Every structure is written in structure tokens, then in C-alpha cells.
Image 1 (cartoon, rainbow, N blue to C red):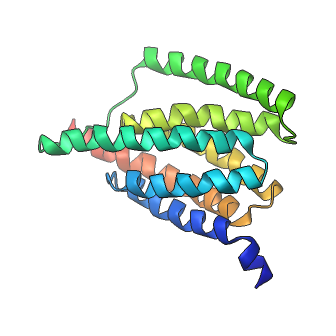
Image 2: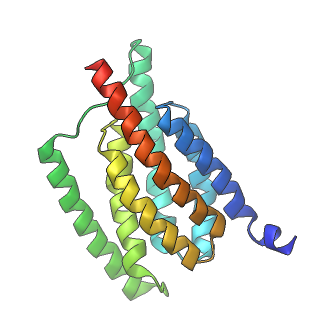
Image 3: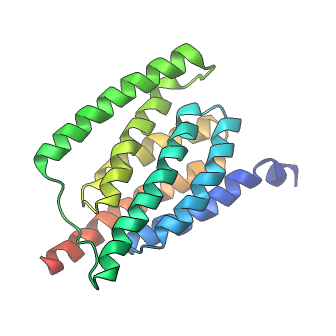
Length: 192
């Protein structure tokens, strides 16, 4: 019982995370609502565990959930869904370059101004997540590749930081991300 009470926030955000990824797999606009609640609780969880970049990332996620919800709903009001599409190559290079700069900046901040014992990985997953959530909001197919990398690294990081339920969720995320990519690709080809 002590274990469950010590990990209640981990368990709750894990349950919400599972609902979120399943709604993402279905390309459902409601994933943004679930995501907003999950990220709000994630701020507390990550701060408590000393994952400061992840904690800060949750604020960005909150803003992006609002942006994603509005972007997807705008198309629903026009009786169409935002189409799944490829990220233009030029944007991909710009966003990967931006992710590298964000990684370096966050690493510098974490190693210099916090007591983080995982600044490289915390900064890496956060930087890639900036790109991933933006690509998801724009419904780019390639967002799944970003999440596969983030999910693999985060799984190991969270086990290390004693967040076992979320770590297990990220292992499940890897599998769902592979199938999500295949499903979105099928939808994109059928639409296009």
C-alpha cells in the first residue's frame, strides 16, 4: 500500500498517458483534452523527481495542447479533418537543427543551475519532444519517428529515476508508435 501511495501521481499520469496515446493512434481530437490534464499533473511529478527539463516541457505541452486542439477543431468546423501529410524536407532540417540547439541550451541550464543527475538525457528527450508535439499538432506523419526515439530513451530514464509506471508506459508507447505510424500512413495514402 505504501508503494501505491508513493506512486499515485505516476499511476494517474500513466493511465492518462495510455488514454492519450490510444486517442492519438485513432487521430482523435480528444487526445488534446486528455493531454492537457496529463501534462498539468506531470508538472508536479517531474518536479518532484528532479526531471526539471521534463517539468518545464510540460508547460510547453500545455500550450501545444491548446494549439493542437484549436488547429484540429478548425478543420472539423469546416467538415474536414486536418489531413495527415509528410513534413516538408526543408522544415524537417530546420526543426532538427532547432532541436539540437534546444538540446544544448537545456543541457547547459540543467548542468549549470540544477542538481539534475541526468542533464544530457533529460535535455535530449525534451528537445526532441519540442519537435514531436509541434509535428503532431500539424499532423505530420514523421512525428511518429520522433516519438519512437523519445519513448525509447525516456523509458530507460524513467526506470532510472524510479518512475516505474510511466517508464512502462513509454515502453508501450514505442509499440503503439510503430503501429500508429503504420495506421497514419495507411490513412494518408487512402486520403491522398
